[in-house]
Image (cartoon, rainbow, N blue to C red; front, side):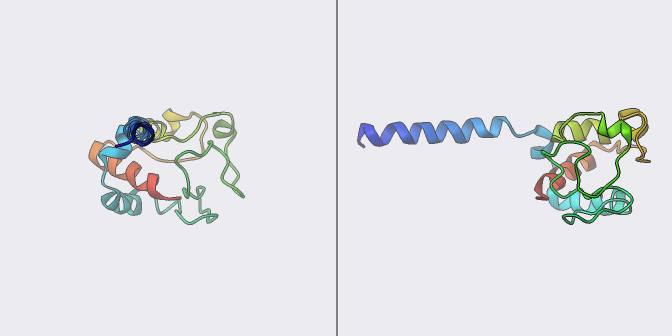
Amino acid sequence: MSKLLWIPLCVAAAGLYLGGAFISPFAMAGDASAGSDVFKTECSECHSVKDGRNKKGPSLFGIVGRAAGTAPNYKYSDALLQAHWVWTADKLHGYLSQPAKQANPGTKMKYDGLTDSKQLDDLISYLSTIH
């Protein structure tokens, strides 16, 4: 193989290898299909995964990677607007694993938290696919 071809192949392989290092272990650990079921039982009463369809809570379409409090046409609590965080898989894990009032005091969200770690990983994996 030519040396000129070898260098780009090595760079591409390194990029694929390192790219996996930046994916949250929570998103990788879960089963997105099972997470869809968790969403239906835990979240769908208040949230939709359809783009732009808010319910009691904002649409979760594209939630992973989105800045908190930025879904269009939804009136957020001051607590969430002042949070200034991005919804990463890790942030969702921490937020959803405890009561919402504890995770973000002053929030409008009424949720006791998901304590089953397998279900939580599945849910985050599912939400990571919605974009």
